[in-house]
Image 1 (cartoon, one colour):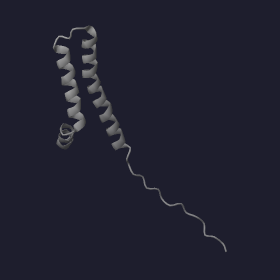
Image 2 (tube, helix red, strand yellow; image 1 turned 180 degrees about the vertical axis):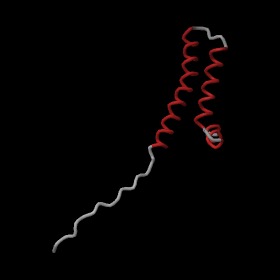
Image 3 (spheres, rainbow, N blue to C red; image 1 turned 90 degrees about the vertical axis):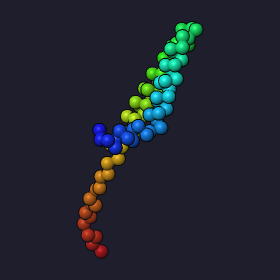
Length: 82
């Protein structure tokens, strides 16, 4: 990965939203939830945002790789006899 790739990733809105989701979920988990359901929901929220970011970046990378442009040679047609 080049320096430009790192800069692009660190300025990505997807990255910062994933970080915000992770932090929000961890804060909810670490503030001693009153029920097990709250603890599980907080962990799912924290991990879900990271997993969503990983999937989104994978799709972006796959789309970038599949945009290779191929140029076909024109087919040769025999001259028409009129």
